[in-house]
Length: 96
Image (cartoon, rainbow, N blue to C red; front, side, top):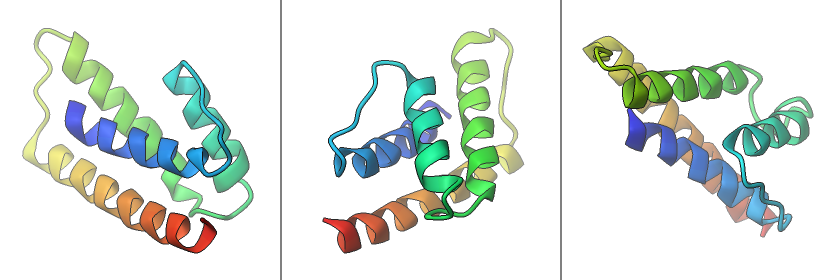
């Protein structure tokens, strides 16, 4: 879960790097991306929810002693990471 979340997070940071924008806190990176890329329809609206779910799962996975992600949850998270990576690659390629 940790690596899946960080795949998503760093894909977002790569997009923001085109603007030379970065933040120290994860929640600020995600909030900026949501405000400037999702709410403006540059990226699909449902990504907002998927990113927040991934963040929550990562935190549970990293910090909860007895959290175990199911195979289904893991599969959905991998799908989200693949989706965001593809969208990020397309965006970066067309906006560099």
